[in-house]
Image: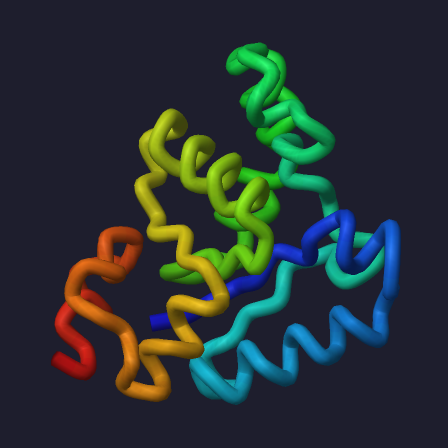
Length: 139
């Protein structure tokens, strides 16, 4: 299994910049293993927006939101990672929708889910976004 990570706009580009992006990668690599991590290009402060933030996810403009998300979808698919980790709920929902609607069907997982899974604390009812390869881990 391989993993890539979305740099959330509010946290990285609009707030704390590359230092928090480095912290994010430290946590991700600690949880999934450095050898299982594939970074998107571009990344950190230069990463692309998912297209779902700023209220767009809730606006009802599904076609426009999905159109603007195509760059992000291609960026994720170009990594060939099995999973996309999304620390932000808006990013998670947008990327999950892009995966589903495009037919790519890659799992999108919250960062906290992987942290809990790695600690053996993820309950059976909290595994709905995990792929089959991770759904039974730690049970």
